[in-house]
Structure formats: C-alpha cells, structure tokens
Amino acid sequence: MFAMRKRALLVIPAFLVVGAAWWAFRPERLFIDKTVSEALPEVMGATSAVGSDGSPAPVLSGQFHTNVHHTVGSATIYRVGSEKLVLRLTNFETSNGPDVQIYLVASNDVTDNETVTRAGFINLGPMKGNIGDQNYDVPADVDLTKYRAVTVWCRRFSMNFGTAPLVPAT
Image (cartoon, rainbow, N blue to C red; front, top):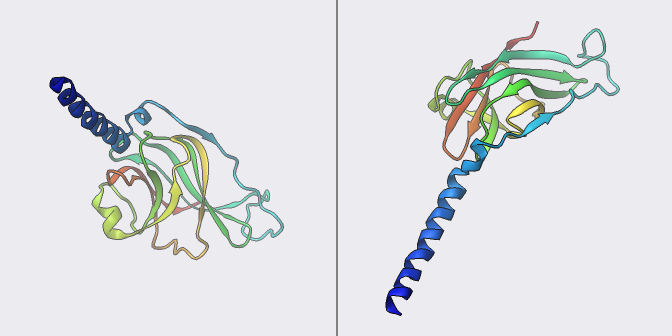
C-alpha cells in the first residue's frame, strides 16, 4: 500500500513537469501551419497618398531573409488614405511557434537576436499566421526613417525568425 502511494506521489509531479514543458515549448505548433489570406485595405474617401489606380501607396518595402527559422516573402508599408499606415506581408512563410510577434525594429537590418532588443522596436502584434498574406496596423506617428526593418520575433525564446530590411518603395 505504501509503495502505491509513493508511486502516485511521483506520478503527479511528473505530469506537472510534462504539462509545464508542453506549455513552454508548444511543440505541436512546429507541425501545425496557420494560413492567412487578408486583402490589402482599400482607400476610403481621401485620395491623397494613393497610387495612380486609387490603391494604397507603398512607402517602404523589402524581402525577408532567414535568421533562426526559414522565413520568406515580402514586407511593404502602405499609406492608406491620408494618415493610416499598414504593414502588409505577402507570399509570407515562416515557422509557427509560441508567442510569435511582428516587430518594426529601429535598425536598417537585423541578422541576430541582440540587435532587436538593443536597437528598440515597436510591437505590431501577434503573428496572424505563419503562411499567407496579412496586414498589421502601424502607428501613424512612427518614424519610418528610424524603424527600417520588420522582424518575426518569438517572445518566449527571444529569437529572431527572420527579417525584412525596408527601403523606399519604387
């Protein structure tokens, strides 16, 4: 009887450790893709800062390169109407993971993890999906001469999945 109780006392902490490890690492996310297919926001009302066909005007753009996880696609910041800025990721693909965020980083490019935290960043929110086209609102007062890179950042492990350095759009 005592051996059975002792075994039960060992099993309970083991389940707690396994549960905590699962929560921290979220291993199922390595195998589960989330696809997003958002349209580019339309210009409502004002026609300033739009393309010749009435579409939102690209301001900055760049291609993703891989840092820690394979990351591809393009990042473009559009001016939608006279004041709204939107970051659009197109043909985007990266790894899924726990607590992955999209950051604008105060750097021309980011190839490591330390630059993100050292240079400073603006968090645009959680990654909506690890595959597909998606939009993120950019604060209207952001200094786009300072924040020149888009990074896919895992907050849980302080890891830079990939970065798109931004240059003036043509």
